[in-house]
Length: 225
Image (tube, rainbow, N blue to C red; front, side, top):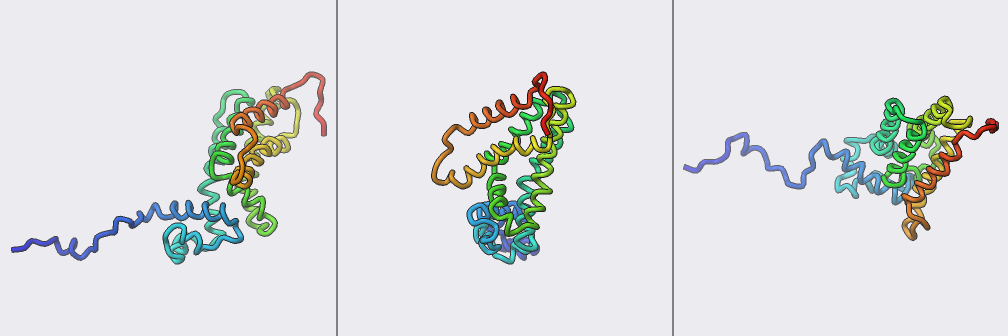
């Protein structure tokens, strides 16, 4: 007598090898979204473009995201927000000097902006903020303002401990990040056709040196408004 599989097993069709795990699919869709947004910008990207890149139907996209804006916000939350939370935790737990804290924060920012994927998103927001002010405002509040608030708090700590001279912490935070942003934008624009005219890591180290020397206390110099 021929022995077949149990009825329950026979009723189930075998899963194809290429079928994605359900819990892994959102990450795959977001990875495809990052590629398409970086290539085409926010305005020119369509959900069907992302679906095609991910190898799924457009309908699949709506199982996880309400639309393009929801997709973009979730992409930012997955790629940028963890770095913000790491910086906030570092500010809370750091026990060394304010100088070392600022260096750690800027190096972490460099890793995600220049070495990671956040630079592509930052470039996209800079180029299209005027056309999507509501989305740009959300990005600024969720990512830029929070990140720079951490850096400003580190500078303020250095001033309070008399490690740094008396400067405006918030303004100083934005000044500290500007060279990193330039390098990130370069990588995702001119970087497609040329290279930086200097080695990236040495660029970062020189920026840290110049920036931190500028914060050092100098006897007899008062804060300028």
